[in-house]
Length: 137
Image 1 (cartoon, rainbow, N blue to C red):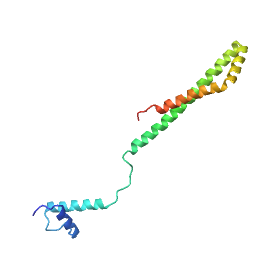
Image 2: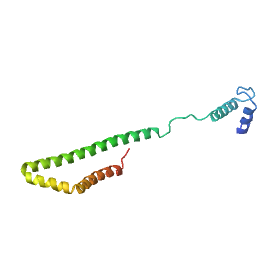
Image 3: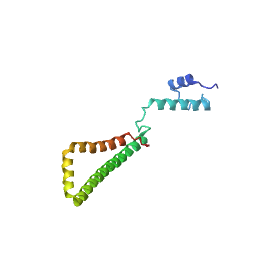
Image 4: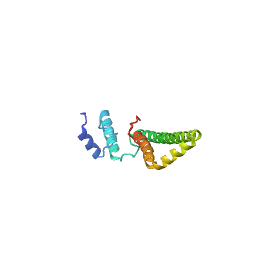
């Protein structure tokens, strides 16, 4: 018996010929069965599942959360160290020369907006630097 091509297989399936028909050779039965399974598989809707890059997305988001926490801790630690250094410096100055410590406080109050702008600029620079650094995930 001759080999069946796609058109012949399609005709056999459309005519309702069972796969275990006696007129087909063993290879013809196998081809017809494979063709029938293919069309059954193609007729079913695809299953909804996770996207292929799901694990990479989860890992990236977890790494972003870890980096965000780390950055926040670093910024808070920098603010704490900056405040502690200023407080210790003022305390030592007050112990050594109370008159000069009053002068420093008066000057700081006089130029408070400039000092505040410098401090905010420093921490803004830290924040921008952390955002611009490319991390390997």
